[in-house]
Amino acid sequence: IHPAAGDCTLDWPLRLKIAIGAAKGLAWLHHSCNPRIIHRNISSKCILLDADFEPKISDFGLARLMNPLDTHLSTFVNGEFGDFGYVAPEYTKTLVATPKGDVFSFGTILLELVTGERPAHVAKAPETFKGNLVEWIAELSSNSQLHDAIDESLVDKGDDNELFQFLKVACNCVTLVPKERPTMFEVYQFLRAIGGKYNFASEDEILVPEDIGNTDNMVELIVAREGNN
Image 1 (cartoon, rainbow, N blue to C red):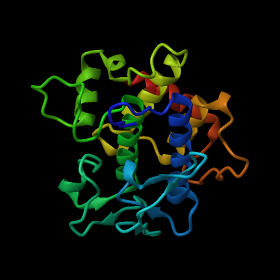
Image 2 (image 1 turned 135 degrees about the vertical axis):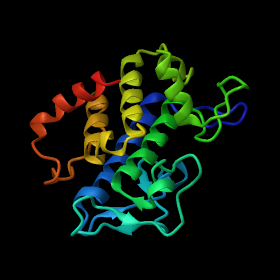
Image 3 (image 1 turned 90 degrees about the vertical axis):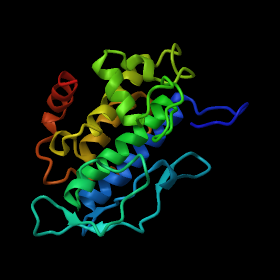
Image 4 (image 1 turned 45 degrees about the vertical axis):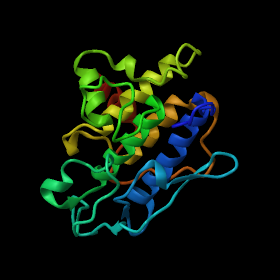
């Protein structure tokens, strides 16, 4: 997604496949693993791909087990954060890591996939812009110019509706208020819905976690989140 001169870029189906597979892995860590795990260092560098472009989450050096007695499933950080450009903004203020911090980091990866830009430097932004990828997206959104963020190599190939839905999911993940971000299980479900026609999902789907509630509400959640953007 960050090619050197003359290199080919990944097409849209492959990018979507990577996003869905990585979301499934992180959702499993947050909701189905026992004990549950906060990764705390999610970035594109720790999403490894095999020969079939199946993603594998790696680099658990900063990972922490969630406290089962803590209803907020949080853990204090020890001064170490993730890679620059991916760290949730609340970490530096609260020194508390939560699953929603992982969601923010994953949302930044989704933005990378759909824009082709790097998290700490936006090549398409004006020279006067000094912010990061999330801040650039926020600026475009406030000016109703989100369509300008999509990687030009992906547009006008019949996937524009999927691209914009994907971008909306990414934007929901990187909202500044942690409680307004979706859970990783919701993110996984949103992405699966977008990529339904590709049959990327495998048979060993993760179980519906108890803290998510009724999946019949999933469509309502999607509509509600899109309506807030």
